[in-house]
Image 1: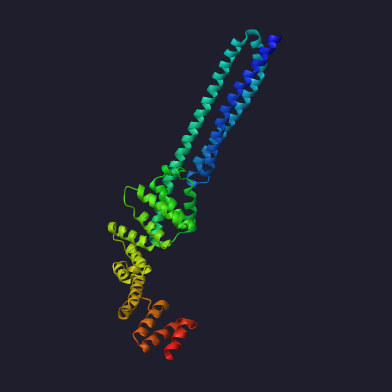
Image 2: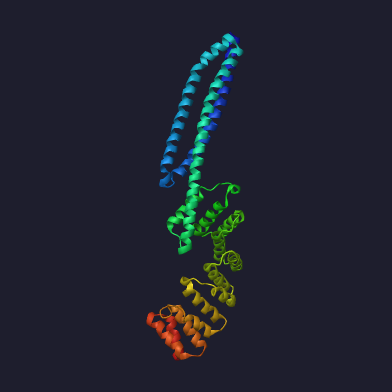
Length: 359
């Protein structure tokens, strides 16, 4: 009798260990499924084009989860109910009988686990397919954004929002990121976060990984240097871009950067290379400022006269006043001061200039 009880207790312990092992396997699977479901939450927030796919994936997940829970509950109940049968068989057949039954149970559970693993693999592939679709879409968005920003120089709140969102889709492992990934991360840092240091680091990595010269990458790097007031680096970047492409925007920025480091002669040379009509106003005014810095007031007046808004722009009018005053032409200086006060009578600066000139 004692022997039977001892065998029964040993059988229960062996069963408990086997059951614990199976539970661990189910827990691993459950953890994997939870991670997939967390990823799906991000994907389900994506745009309308992918809504049907995401909903289908969500339905598939629920099916897997329900199936999984049903398998656990049904098998757990079956195993619990089988305990007394198992103990009886052990009592009759001894440990050999228990070993045979344990092997049978393991085989059944392994089949269930393999089936679940296959379903999980399919689910993972579905998620990967969706991510590929999303990545293609964010590259399209990136291209649209680059074109939009090239034309307007501005960014909307909607563009900031999608930059922030798509960055969440980038690989967490930096070694797995492509140059497109680093580019969109740099855009996010620059335009959405005003984090120019990280923008610089990201776009430098994009340039390094990209086998081809990319104008947008190099331009953003130049603007990042400017934002951090690293004008020497910005000038170098402008020159590198101009070796590849003769672009008015870069000539103009090159002139601005030379002005920042107080090299007006080089700035004038850069500004004179700008051909684009839309930049003529700013170009002529900046050339006038550069000539003013080197004391060539006749040239300053020449380029101020080429500004289309010379009769209404207070900055241009101030340039005339300052130039004529330095040329000791009081009459013209007073004339342009009065023009400025006609536009803005309450302007204290021009009032003081007029008082000083009359005195």
